[in-house]
Image (cartoon, rainbow, N blue to C red; front, top):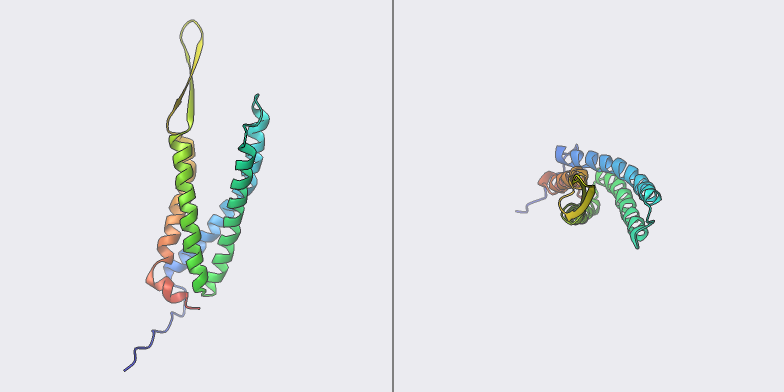
Length: 167
């Protein structure tokens, strides 16, 4: 007696459909970020008196390229998962895992190692001190992306998603 594989579902399972919608949402946010990151990097350097920090332009360019590549990949994965591609499901899990690792690394670098400058009035003048501490804005800015990446990975790793992506 042979055990045939069960028939795939006629409709896309809920977790898979949710992951596809989240990929589209992340594509939209990534497209906005791909535009705002270089513009913001330019504005920051235009407003500083010291000019561009050495290597900052390269960091902004590489970050923009990686964000743009991940954004395009999310759109392709979303379309191909709807077409039941098992490779797209695996690729989306791998890409989101890599993106999650980069986001957590940047969270640590920007959040834990960022210089925090404070100015206090000592009565005889202003005193500026710089210390290293958590950057709440950087941490809060990466939280939605981290949460969405985790949700996409979890939803695409479910058995119904594996059953849907059978080609």
